[in-house]
Image 1 (tube, rainbow, N blue to C red):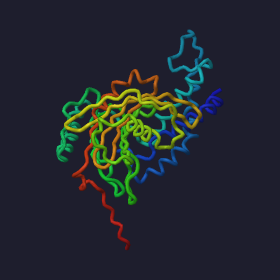
Image 2 (image 1 turned 120 degrees about the vertical axis):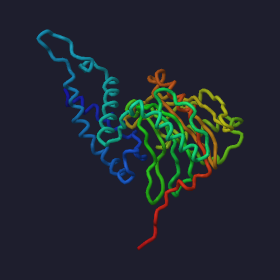
Image 3 (image 1 turned 135 degrees about the vertical axis):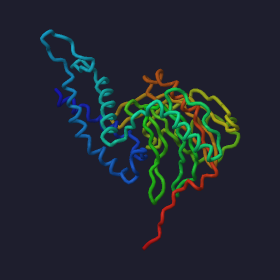
Image 4 (image 1 turned 45 degrees about the vertical axis):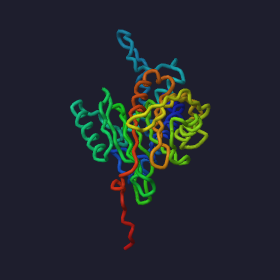
Length: 323
């Protein structure tokens, strides 16, 4: 029945909502609403479940001519995995739409203007512009570390035009969250991470594999060490662009979900070191989707650039004086 279907699917909805980037803010969401959104997502599980109950309408119904129903039909022979996959996508789409996080694709004529705007920002900071924008991609150049608790970095990369971008939140205590883009309902993401422990690493391309493996493990385990297992770096490819060293890292791991499932993830990351730390842009998809997304993920990782210095003017200053 529709009721039992919803009850079986609640853990999948809850787990999916737990993976949303609730500690960073979309360009469409003000920092002041971040905590409210976190609470509202949790409380909206019941609303999402009721919405999903409409899935019972997808079941086949007899017609005068016994014509088969559409491909959206779900029958009792659907496997549990199919239901979980459907619910993950539905919950992601419903939650993002509910809170206004979905950004509509830009019209084709807007792409050139956006590239010009991003390049103008890069040039204003004295760094090279993006030479060419791949088809189907949008450019990004944002300052990470505008809050009082972080040293600023200029981060740049390209991402698929239909992905959602989220940015760090800001308040009087500083900055929280990171720069991220993704198609979250499908599990495709690109996330910036700063690994401070090693400090500035010279001769990056001569470093042992352990440095890159540790950097990536830190990147994927920000919610705790119990969210992954069997992590492995499968390939390292050095590259140098405009005098800056990057290590392209292929990797894979198993994501441990809150609902007790194990999800195979495969990804590509770009690791560099500027300022006083190591910086990582890591991208990943589910193993099942990787054959389709690999080219996209590699394009994102290859486009990653990170710069330090000359960013003091980008800091946000709050008047903390007491009346």
